Image (cartoon, rainbow, N blue to C red):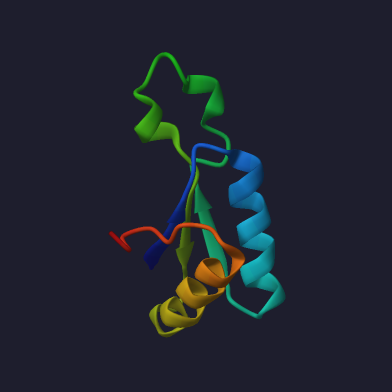
Length: 76
């Protein structure tokens, strides 16, 4: 799995997940339900993160995220 997106906004992460899934890309969201731990854990540890399951889908996922106007994880 390769991380392609990260946001402190769960709604934005969910929207991007829907975008990728609509294009046939299987996605796993890490920290989807960790918001309740905010305050007990550093915010970067509970930020929703999207991973593509198939590494071959990563370039297409990154392109779709960029075209959407969102920032791709690891794009520097």
